[in-house]
Image (cartoon, rainbow, N blue to C red; front, side, top):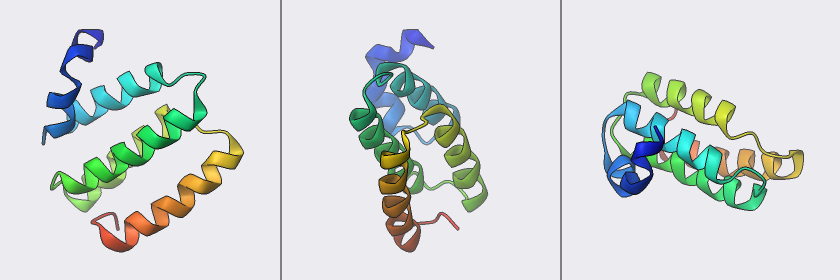
Amino acid sequence: MLDFVAHEAMLEASTNPFAQVVLAHLKARETHGDPANRHNWKVRLVRNICDRGFSPKDVRELFRLIDWLMILPPALAGVFRQELDKIQKHDTFK
């Protein structure tokens, strides 16, 4: 997966669910020890999967994986949940 580090823009733009998983993995590694950046990327990745035209079921499954890969400290987890609520109101995440 590390071969894809130079192709992050391609991964982010892809409609292939596996590309989103690879990007989440790369960002989880990159943001290890940097909770604020990890939070920002987690929000960005969730918004990205909502914007790629995946089915609601695929969005939920991809979200679960991103949530598992990118664990946040409690304070940021609460902020993330608030942002997730906003995303859910506007996107296909149900």
